[in-house]
Length: 444
Image 1 (tube, one colour):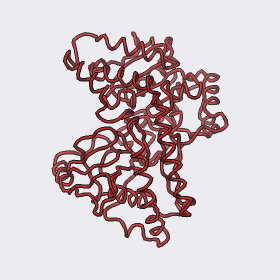
Image 2: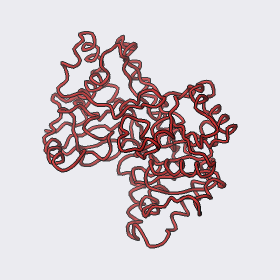
Image 3: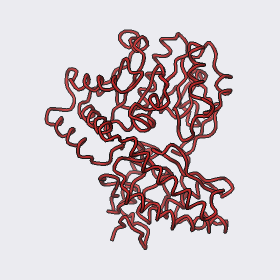
Image 4: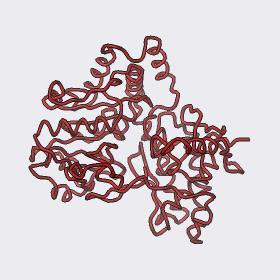
């Protein structure tokens, strides 16, 4: 029988996953469309590789095993899989069509809604992916300021201007790499050392897991304004989660531009660029940023329904409530076991991360060990608690009970110094390293 969400005697049967993987390897390079979803991010040989369906906060792999999911599509699932109100809106729009030969009325309706809830949204552009709107924001910043250089902090997608700061930089001209540098979060001096009259924009994630210290975000905004540099908030993770109006609303900072993609359409592909009208008006004639599917109506309908639900039910508060239970519960268990020096869970309550101190051993091996034991207990886990509105009290209780079983196993392995020997498969892998003026990026 396949695993269910319970404390199973056996690890999940992944026969069909492995069969699909073998087929994919013959024709796909690589086999995944998103690195964070690929086999390198899960314990090879033990973890499932392909999913079949999902509902609420639970997901089923192709072999029929059921798990509580804390990945949430790597971010876009904010309400829950197959959420009725959103799916009903998609089905209703499907009756009228998907993509058309002229603009669709929902483009106006969504833009009006975004203008109402996002502080800097004097003007709005709609697209499909986060990487695209990040690149559009950089391009229009360069056009507006007449400058070329870009400073970044965080992850901003696959386009040349950003990915040249990482170890996966082949195929990118050196001239492009020379125009971009990365600075460290919560290190104002690292920004000051790079900020000069040639910097068109500073783009950063308002937070990833660490909270801003010493008024960091406000100081970044001040320095940018004084330097004539545009400030771009990359709100892929913070938008609609920490507050419906995102980090802008939460921290009381209005950046010149902001970009969004995950969360606000509950899984449908859509992205937003919001910002000052005087900057955004350059898209009228001077800066080109258009895409055939920017006005695709199913995603527009999903976005309207998702945001409506978020506002009506105060979804950010629920994400924080459930996420806080997991964060505090994990840390309490670790403390009880004397593991606090080795592992902790931290971050904003809507999205937290479990980390392992180097003194515990190889972090990738430890993460892989945790994964294999949690998959056995019906939990899909990548080191994060990406919360959705559908995570129930029962989900939280089951997960904490699983941690209470697994963490003693981890303690035993750490103390014996043989974590690797207890792996039934291969450890997880890092996605890439940052190489330009910043600390390494963890697997994500």
